[in-house]
Each structure stands twice: as structure tokens, then as C-alpha cells.
Amino acid sequence: MHLLEAGMAGKTLRKLDFVSRAGAMTLLICLLAPFIVTAVFAQEPEALAAAAPENRGWITLLPPVVAIGIALVFRSVIPALFIGIWCGTLIIIGPALTSGWTAFLEAFDTHIVNAIVDADRVRVLLFTMMLGGMIGILGRNGGMQGIVDRVTRFASTAVRGQILTAGLGLVIFFDDVANTLLIGKTMRPVIDKLRISREKLAYLVDSTAAPVAGIAFASTWVGYEVSVIGSTIEGIPDLNTSPYLIFLGSVPYIFYSFITLFMVFAVAYTGRDFGPMYHAEIRARQRAIEEPDVIVDGDDAASGDAPRSYASSALIPIGVVVATLFSSLLITGEGESFQQILSSADSYLALMWASLLGVASAAIVTVLRRVLDLNQVIEAWFEGVTTTLFAVIVLVLSWTLADIVQTLGTAEYVTAATSGYLPLFLLPTSAFVLSGIVAFTTGTSWGTMGIMMPLVLPLSWALLTGTDQPGISDQMYLFHGSVAGVLAGAIWGDHCSPISDTTVLSSLASECDHIEHVRTQLPYAITSGLLAILLGTLPTGFGVPWWICWPISFAAVIAILKIVGRPVEENSKNA
Image (cartoon, rainbow, N blue to C red):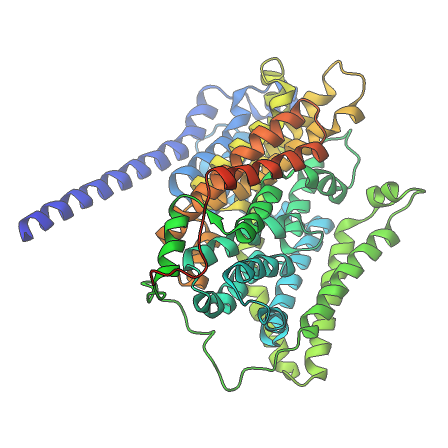
């Protein structure tokens, strides 16, 4: 037996060694590729700068391709983005003996610095950090806990418990991490009491976190999404539209998020499940919840010094953020119609004002109620800010890569090379599928958006403006659909990926075995993704309005649950 175990261990080690050597070889190839290509194929720097973007050749594809390749192999977005930036800097500098070292330094001290000197980008960073700080305060002053406590009293059956959990996912809309941790940890004892499986809790939490935050009008996700869109359209001279308005125009085409949310409530209301989730629910109904194998931190344990929960301590700051955002858009915008006002509004300034007043109102409410003193409020705010540092780093690197891609003219080259081969109606579907693949293999939605948006958005705009169709305004649904394809595909791949941070957090917060969470959620995520393609992105590519695709997709969800799903009895007699 020991020999067999030793043999299996040896095979495992050899397999891991092969994987590590293959990964190292891939990294080496990616690092050497820019040197080889620039030395053999590239033009002189002056000639490269003088050449028309569409004539610069396929070398302009290297930065995003290298970034995507490294992200797929190593499943880490930060080094992937930086190496992509370094690769683009090397191409700009041109072949020389010391180009690699010079490009490495210049990527950091020039291109990354230039990416954050823009005032609008600084505002996005401030918004992201300030909103994270506000969430930190609301987590410490008992405000978010108060919202949960108000509604949990209505959870008397398994159906009500699931609907309540999903509904709370809509209430905590401003951040996916706060949504996941708060609802997962708070609803866990309620779910156990109602004999609902931990796998179902993890699914409900995971499938309402990112989809809600990604389409909400004011959230940490919106700040990032608008900034990525804004940095990308800076290189499109003919596109003079507010990034926030582009985001709002794309929201109806984010089919995956809406289908996923509808499926969550349909599953909860009908009491029907399919796949591994059905068997997990049957086990939970027939016996008491077993102790989980995973170990999580016990910060949600009962504590005698826990602050008293007031729902208004969270509702007031959230209301201030939403009200300030919309009023600021109206104040900074100009025009006769509502659309003209939103189009000309300074969305970055509105986001920054909203986050500032949100933090101020959260601090004032907390201090006046004597839940925390001023020093504790500042400490809670700082803890919330630190949770956004990863997002800030990814955001800055994404901006930098987008600037380099714009300098090299990658979008123009891709447009010239694919304009005769890629049908316009496939733009939204292609963006959705490719973004889903990248997100699945990297485990990050934001990193996927930062990599894919600089490629998809300029390409779709160039293909639309280069057609012989009567007017670009009549085809904006394809442009908005392509933007939505990136946003939705990033969430889809994230839901399917076992290495996604939100997937892991959902397992931990629900105290559910991580592999079981992935295994039970995957059929639902794949079903929503296929419906988004077949009844969403493809029909809209042919000109079918989104408001027709929505009800058809929702009806398909009900039909699938009726045909494939099986009812789970709330009170099993076999216990």
C-alpha cells in the first residue's frame, strides 16, 4: 500500500514538474518573442511611428496577445498585464542590444505614470477607494447587518429562505465582495435551519453578487467598467459620447446577468433543481447539515461587543450615493433632452462627488449614533480602502495597456485584417464567448475587461463605421451589444471558473466545499450562458430588439426548469 501511494505521489510530482516546466517554457517564449520579432520583422522606430496604423503589421498584436497568453497559462492577471505593457514598450523603442532593459524601466517610469496623470482616471481611483472605504464603515457600524436582520424574520420555509437570500443579493448591490461575505455568513444559520443545502446558499450568493454589481447604476463595478470604456474611446476620435452613457446603453444587452438573476429567483420560487444541485438539496432535506470540511475565519461569531444593527445606518449613505450620482449628472450635463444631458455629463466627477458624500454621511451617522468613535470610523474606512488595492492595480495596468495598444494602432490593424471576414452580426457573440474563455481561465472579471475592451470596442466601432449601411445610429445596438458582450462574458467565465475570487469567497462565506460549489453551480451557469447566446447576442446581432429577447429568454428558463428540473420537497418524510 505504501509503495502504491509512493508511486502515485511520484506520478503526481512528475506531472506537477511537467506542468511547471511547460509553464516556464511558455513564459520564456513570451518573454523572448518581442526581442525576436522586433529584431527580425520590425521596422525602425521612426518608420513604425510614421506608418499608417493598418500598415504596421501583425507585430502590433503582440502586447494584448502576450498578455492574454500569460494570463491563460499562469492564471494571474497582474504579471500578464505588466508583461504585455513591457512587450508594447519594447516594440515602440525598437530593436537594440539594451532595448529589453530600457523597455522594462520605461514601462514603469513612463507609460504607467502617464496612465494615471489624467484627471478623469484619478477621479475613478478616488471613487473606487472611497466607495470601498464607505463599505468598510457600513460593515463595522452594523448598517448592512441591520438590513439583513430586518428581512430574515420572513424566512419561514425553504422557498421563502431562498427567495429572501436572492432578494438580499439585490439589496447589497454596490459591491460584489461585500454582497458575498455579508449575505453568505448572515444567512448560513437561517439556511441550515430550513434544511437548505450549503451548495444552494453558495449558488444564490455567487449568482447575485457580480451580476447585480455589474449592472447597478452606482457600484464599485460601474466605476471600473466606465473607466475601461472611457480609456478605450479616447483613441476613437469620431466617438464623442460619455463613457457612462455608453455603459447605460449596453446594460439592456448584458443578457447573461439578467438571465442568471431571473434563473436564481425562478429556481427559488419553483423549488425545482437539476444536475448535482438537485441531489445536494435532497441530501439536505433528508438529514441535518453535516459539519463542513472547509475552515473559515470566525469573525462572524457571536460577540458581546458587536454594534447594535440599524438598517438606516446603511440605507442613508447608500441613498446619498445614488441621489448624489444622478443629481451630479444632471448638474454637470447640458442639453434640452434627458439623453443629451446624460451624454454631456461629467460622469467621472459625478462618481467622485457621490463617493465623497457617501463616506461623509456614513461617518456622520455612525458617530452621531455613538456606534463608533471618530478614530474607529477612520480605521474602518481605511480597512475598506485596502480591499480595493488589487482592483486599483489592475485598473492602472489596464489603462496602460490600452494606451500602448492605442499608440501601436492595434485596433486599426485588426479592423483592416478582419473587416472582410468577421460578419457584423457576430460581434456581440464573439465578444461574449472570447471574454468568457479569458475569464474562465484567469479567474478574474476585471482583468478580462481590461484586456478585452481595448480590442473589442475599437474593432466594433471601426467595422460599423466602415460599412455601407445607411447610418451608424441605426446600428448602435451592435456597438452596445459588443460592449455588453465583454462585460457579460467576463462575469460568465468568472462564474464557471474554480479559481475565481468571488467563487472562492462564496464557498468560504457559505462554509460549502469549494469543489461541490463549482460542480453544482456549473450547470446553471452554462445554461444561462447558452441562453444568452442563442436567445440574446445572436438575435440582437440580426437586429432583434432586446426587449423581445428578454421575455423569450425568461420563458426558456421556466421551460427548462419544468422539463429538466425536479421538485425538491421542503419536508422530506425520509429524514
